Image 1 (spheres, each protein chain N blue to C red):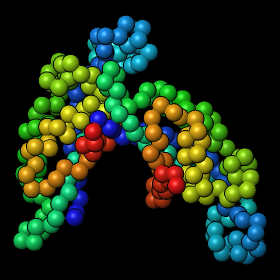
Image 2: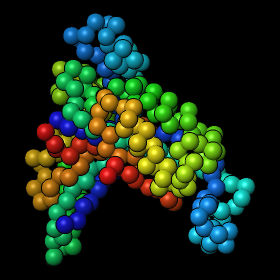
Image 3: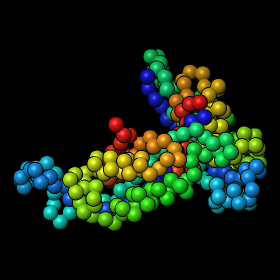
Image 4: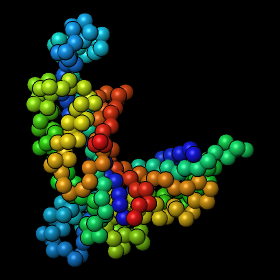
Length: 135
Length: 136
């Protein structure tokens, strides 16, 4: 039997949405308050969904401790209480939550092999959320 | 096709232990959950059914019927129970959230006549849930 397991994590980070290819005025127009030069922050909620056959011996899709450890090392240690604009993943990309969702998906895809990564869902605020399932 | 989701809550105790494992293997696989004295959770169950909207009633399913089925088949069997000791599915199977979602699916599927079962979602805690869509 195939089941989907979702685990939720919280991290906090700051960012500024700014694209060097646009003028100051265009940046203000596109990103609004998010273009504030001093940046701002969010409490992000990350939901990671993995799927797979339920193991007959353990009753589990995968070991939760292994998933937690992968997310801690790959995502929380990297992004929690960080300035996203200074992270390697955003040297050439604007740290929108769309781009952050993709970055998180790719990091987890590379590092978590115990089950199939289905989706990451990222809440920037309680009102905005983004989902990325790979291509 | 319209999807309808009904939410309910139940509280139950359980532990994770495979008698074929050594104590060390049980500890490694299940950690704190392997404590044979058990522990408990407040579970949240979301049952999603799908179907065409009946043109006379405007319903996918009569919610009263769905509530009755949920009460009878799931809540009476699981709420305030020890899953390992009182629920037949778990006398020989570990009551993980994955297996719980599958067991609830199996209890409901044959009882639903009008709408079709689409998804069973079981939250063990607000930060952990399992979805089962009836996939083999």
